[in-house]
Structure formats: structure tokens, C-alpha cells
Image 1 (cartoon, one colour):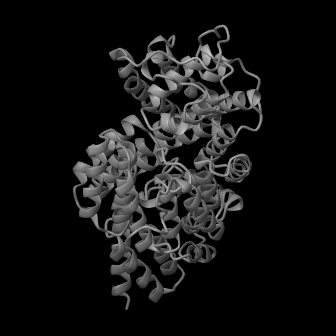
Image 2: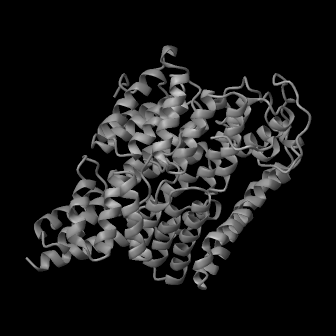
Image 3: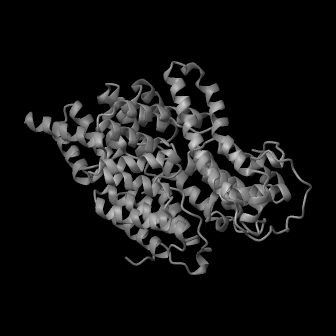
Length: 542
């Protein structure tokens, strides 16, 4: 499945497997006769409106909330180019921060992270401009507009339009909620956690204007999930569903939260309820992932194919095709996966999860040069831990250790920024540091994450951190727990096999390592190589 919210970077080049936030569906509740997956054929911070909008423009006089914005027209080329410039500046800021950390300024990482956040956000403030061009970009933004429909389009355009709109109509609680949600979604895609503070202010403004409105509560659930505070995400989602049982965003956030808390049976029940109430792409993909976690890949594949057949626009097609590509790549079917990624990119040639998936499939199929080229494009636009680690491992595999170290240092820079933005990054830290950093820090982070949520991913992370710290006997129960639900992941099997080998369970080690390589022989350039070497040692010792 495709990564969602960039929840974690997996060890040995394995990416996060929680599904990405699907494009908002335009389907109505179950009563709209949309087929379900089971029916398928095979807190308020006081701010000014301008501050909450994330702009520096002074607040204009209040306008009636029913006022419509002018009709659409072409935005100037400068506005279109601004996001690309912002991405370049963001990566440059990360590089400068990482260089400072390597020069021994670790004691000042927290204060540096604040400056880094300013550097990474400056472009976004500039993009907001005075709002005149943004106002022309999307017609009719008002509290009556369906937030889900708006967010199906270009997020940068939506954010600029919403910022302009709430300056003109600062009492439009629906627009504030939509702006907050848009900022959450943009942070997930561009790797800029500093957006979360702006999302929080916008959602708080919406709730101040209309206490308890379900859009803002659902937005708070999405924000909490993006920050990896899944207990809070579940609470916000439940409150939103009390107000509106058919809120697609809240239904999806509830499934996500239960999955990430390791409450898989409840997640399956929540997915069934969501499928009954709001069948559509966002629910189908989560339903499929819950089935995959329980080892039912056949159903997961069928539901994703149904979702793809029902995808109503380029964003949906790109999202679901990427999810299918990731599912097939995880089964070692690289040719099939590449075809799905091609379909995703034909629908949206800028869809970063599809580009990342294609790069991983290229690497697994032996095209390391092509994979490096593609991943370099990804991290230039979205320097998130998953693709950074994957690129670093490809550099390391070809012998370019200096470039590899630079990517791993950027992961450290990103996690420092994310912490400053209120994101729990212990899982990211544990997975990256276990293989490419400080093993003591990896173990600390893994234990902290395990205390918060007990999922297959946190079990695997803790097992591997313990093993890398030389505590393989302690690691073995966690490695076994990571594979106990039926979920099949080559990196999990590799980790379990290496731990079994270290603890003298040689027959079990051979079985686990063989299973990893049979399932997905190219799961990681470094991990797969280590698995083959370990198997060779085991065979020689027989």
C-alpha cells in the first residue's frame, strides 16, 4: 500500500506501509447506491484571521459569508512557479541544518529547528501574496462548498484561494475548517511539518466561530493523525461522528487511528461501518489495507481494483493505482507494479508517491541508476525520511558513502524540524537510526513508540533496534509479534531471520530469510544483500 502521512521510514529501505490519505471522494453516503467493498465483484488558540490563514496580510472588513468569489481565470506564471521555488528552498534549508548538526552543534538542534522552520515556511508565506490572484483561481469558495470536492484539486491553488477568502469573509467557519485540512494535506505531501501549526490555528478559528462543527473536528482528527498522536485522532474522529455519522474524513481518520494504535479488530469493524456509510475511494483503500494487515492480500487486491474502476478523476486514479503498485511490489511482482505506477503518473505526472514507488520497483528489478534518478527527483520536492533513506541506501550500494551520509543527515534534520512542529517522530528515528545512526538512540525511540502504540510496525522497529544494540534475545518476541497477524512484509521477515540466526534458532532463521527473499527478492538493496549473505552462512554451517 502507499505511504500515508509519511508515518515512518522503514529500516533497510522499507517504506511506510500505512495507506496515504486518499483524494477526497465526491460520493455521498451509502444511500447514494455506490457499491461497497463487500459487495464488490471480484483546543482554541486566539489568533487573528490573517494569522490563522498563514499570511501576513491585514484582515479586511468582515463580509457576509454567502458572498461568492469571482470566476476563475489564469493565475500568473510566477504563482505557478512559486511552489517549485519553495521546494528548492526547503531542501536547501534542510541541507544547511544537517551540515550544522554534523559540525557538532547538536546541543542547539531545537533552537535551530525553529530557524529551519522559518526558512522552510518563507516560500509558503510569499506564495500567499496579497490574495488577488488566488481569489481568481477557484470560484465560489464559501462555507457552502463541499470541502472534499475542493480538496480534490490542486492544494496550492486551494490554499491560496482559501486564504484570500477568509480574509474577505473571516466568519466563514466552513472555509476555515477546509483551510486547516488543506494545510494538513499539503504538509503530508511536501514534507513541511511547519504547516501543522497553521492548520491548528485555522481549525481552532473554525471551532471558535461554530463550536463543535464536524468539519473542524474531522480536520483536528486528520491533524492529530498527521502528528502521529493517534489517541487524540481517535477522540476527535469520534466527536465528529457524533455530530455527523457520515463524515467521510472522520470515518477514515477513525480507521487510521485504530490501525496505528494496533487495535486491528476494531479497525476492521470501523472499516466495515465506513464501507456501509460512505463507500468510495478513501474508504475502499483503508478497507483493503486492514485486510492486508490480516494477511488477506487477495481481498485487498480485489477491493483496490474495484476502487480503481470507480475512480472519478486523475487524483483518485493516481492514488489507487499507486496503492496497487505498492501492493504488487511488496509481493515481488515488479513488472505489474511498474504498470500501475505508469497508470498513476499518466493521471498525475507529479504524484510523488507514484514516483517513489516507481523508483523502489526500478531498484528491486535491477535498474539502480533509474531508481536513483527518480528518487533524486522525489527528495528534491519532498525531503521525507522514507525516500531519503531509500536514496541513501542506493548511494551506499553503489559505493558512494559520502552521498549516502548526506541523505541520512537530512533525515535527522527533518526529524528535528518535525519535532519542532509537534510531530511524534520516534518511529522514524528508530528505523533510520538502527541501520544508519546511533543504535542507542534507535532503541530509546523504539521503546518510547512501543509504549504509545503496539502495532506490527512498532514491534518490528523495537525488535530491530534491540538486535542492533546487541540484545537479540530480548528482540525475538517482538520480531515474532511483528509477523503474528498474518501481515507479510519482506523486511519484517528479514529482521526476524537475522534475529533468529543471532539467537541460535538456525532452522527458523533459514525459513524466515528464505521467505523474505521469495516474497520480495528486491525489498531493499542493503537488506536483501544481507539476507542472502546470512543464508549463505547458514547453508555453509549445516
